[in-house]
Amino acid sequence: MNARGILVLGILTLVALTLALVLGRPLTTPPAPESEALVPGLRDIINDVDAIDVIATDGSSLVSLRRERERWRVREKDNYEADFGLVQGFLRDLASGRRLEPRTSNPQWYPRLGVADPGEPNATGMLLRFPGTDLPGVLVGNLDNTESGRFVRLEGEAQTWLSDRRLDLPGSAVRWLERAVMDIPASELREVTLRHPDGDTVRLRAADSDGDDWVLMNVPDGREAAAMWQLRPVANGLANLNLDGVRRHEALPDEAVRALYVTRDGLNFVASLFEDEDGRWVHFTVSAEVSAAAELADEDEAEIAEILTDAAAVDGRLSPWQFRIPERKYEVMTRRLESLLIEEA
Image (spheres, helix red, strand yellow):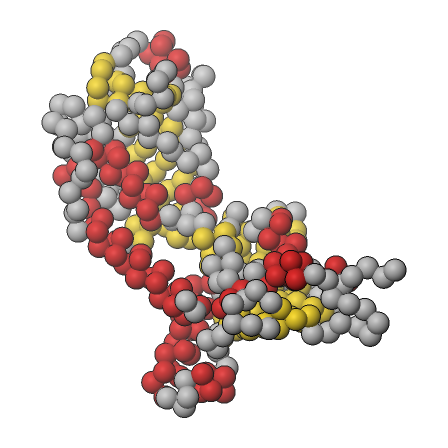
């Protein structure tokens, strides 16, 4: 599958998931009577909920999730896209959950079950609220001894309950994000260039259509390229690329490393990589050369327009952001020429 195919497949998958969830696919478990429902009233309006606030143990806002145009976004991360499946799955778990057994209604025992109000001494649980609705907030406490259910308490009520759900809440705003940035394997690329500010350059070109064999193009006289297993990871720089953090793009430092990934279907991914006190970051711009698009499309104007439209769409999704990436992926995407040569005797 080529890069455009991967991107289109991702969009279609998201649309299908959105329709399946938003149009009210039946829950897989029988509905609980309102007297037993984990969050009374949630099941009836689950498709209308467009805001969720998670309050941390200390009473601060951990994450504010807002749904816009059928996509969930994380306010604390500049409205970057949330993991749609995670948010909707958690909502559906809440909507189908039951209160199994009553437990303590004595506030002195709340800390032991993790259902003390956020900000109270010894509080350990998290509070969920649903702004814009009449739904009650719910305090999500500790797992019981069997780790099959979690203790909960509706906000403002004294009674604590054992639920039939684990309700594993991500404990940071980052963990609510859509972590996948892209997944373009080496087999979809024909050329990779890494250029450091001091001029050090790595140039790789695909030697076959499978992405298994690559040629290091700028081997100095008298030197030899390293083994293929050392070259191949560089060509896989865009494969399985996931973020550890995200922020709005503002500017790039002069010392940024520039990496160009040219796909077989005519897209140019330019990655600018740099480090600062907050981690290792990459910023992308995406384009398609008209001449290359014309050659790939065999002068078909409609297909040329499609390639250019694809490039603009991908650039529109990626270029507004800087992505913090894992150290190992950063090192692969910023390799130097010497590290890809056999050591001199």
